Amino acid sequence: MKKSIQILTTVFLGIVAVMLIAIFIRMLAGPKEHAKEETTQEDTVQTSQAASQNSPAGTSQNSPAVASQNSPAGTSQNSSAGTSQNSSAGSNSEASNADPGELPQDNIVTTQHTSVIKGQSYSYTANTGTMVMESGGSYCEIFFTAYTLNGDGAADNRPITFAFNGGPGASSSFIHFGCLGPRKVELDEVGKTISMPSKIIDNENSILDMTDLVFIDPVGTGYSRAAAGSEPKDFWGYDNDIRSVGDFIRLYVNRYQRWGSPKYIAGESYGTTRAVGLCDYLATNFSLNINGLLLISSANDFNAVIETGANDVSDALFIPTFAADAWYHKKLSSEYQTMELEDYLKKVRAFVDEEYIPAKFKGDAITESEKEALAGKIAEFIGVSEEYVMEADLCVNLEDYSKELLKDKKLRIGRYDGRITGPVVSGSYDDGTSDPSAASTDLAFGNTFMEYVTEELKYVTDRPYLPMSPEVGENWSFANDEGLIRQENTIYENISKNNYLKIWVVCGYYDGATPFYSAEWVYRHLGLNDDLRNNVQITHYPSGHMIYVNKEAFEMFREDAEKWFTDR
Image 1 (cartoon, rainbow, N blue to C red):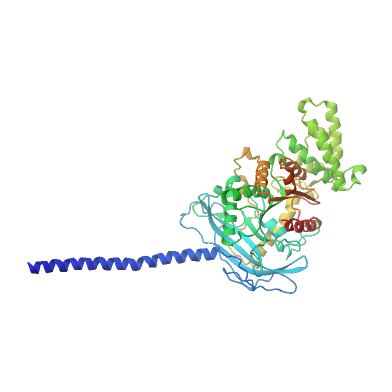
Image 2 (tube, rainbow, N blue to C red):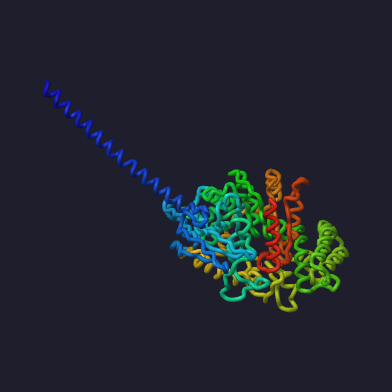
């Protein structure tokens, strides 16, 4: 009996020993796996958090830290290869059916540079690459370029501006490499390329000395793509686009520790539509309040910029732009041709407000004699025949007018810039394929921007860069009043709730894509209280859609920008 008890005791102790050994082994294995997970997560965050914590040496704790090389000439000096290799293919649909678990990693390169702005040399850090993020349940890679001025505590309370172009379907390369960034493509006085390929020069009119800059390519443009398992169309639409770009901005502000910085958004064309939507989205969802919106060639009410047949408003708002084009090309009578442009346009505006709009609102009730009198005045103001205006039923169309004004010379004027002319060729005027002003821009920017990204910013990938993506525009979903977006109420609500929000609307007199009088009309209909009306400023320049390609207008813009950013 005693022996049996000893045997049972031995067996029991053996079982307990085995269990204890198993538990001990699991304890050893568990922390090791957990530690491995933590290391992987930490490495990912460190890679994506290329935060510009600029020490006196101007180094960044991220990708290859590169010492700042300040040359006497102030040219951009990249002191590290800092090359990022990414062999992703380039179509927007390639990743749609991939395993959702195969997400790419953040891929960001850090370099150091100096550039001369207004005669002074500035040292700055550039972070260039893709940030992988989730938005609305879908994943994407957002390509961005961020510039942060170097110096002790430089980023602590310096303003930061997030910038992009429009389209929909445009990358940020134009506003980046032509307007706001520290380096730019070289152009002549009127915005045409000087050589092929164009040269890269310091941007004397950059605003980097006033604000740090982050240029964002929305999904489907530039190097930005939908990630594995997500459809590109998940990001192509008014609401989805605002959400994805807004989520990127919040992520950037958080990772790069910019919550304490005054925050601005700069958009061009449809980018102004996105900017207003973002202002509302960021404040509503993240309490991330914006200090200012810089709206270049604004499109904040599509009824005011799109010719849709029986749209008396847009018909009226295009007339001052046609008048400016006629004045520039010297197609007016001596009475008007000898006037200064701004004085002449005051007269045209008065005609539109006091005669054209009231007459058009009569509809079929207008008499034939009233119609003929009106057609005669329109013809005189925009440099065409009365017969042409009568045939157009008083509604002169932009595309037709572009061929009518200089038909005696067999030339058409540009949509983006009415001063630029070219032969009438096949293609769409709206998408730029037959617009002489769009062709001029494409020649200047394309190759040279890629040279800048790969050779100076050191970001290299086999993926094609898409400056403009027709695929994005063709598949865009507005889901908002059949695409005729109106943002007057959004602007009113945001300024009324955030009295610190200021808006600067920048217009070109010769812009046929987003006419200057359309912007004036929109911002006259906000309904703001008297004490808030000064929060909105409208400035006109002798330019087209891209105010920065014309040297005179660009220098005027820079001077005005100094006042706007200083007046907080």
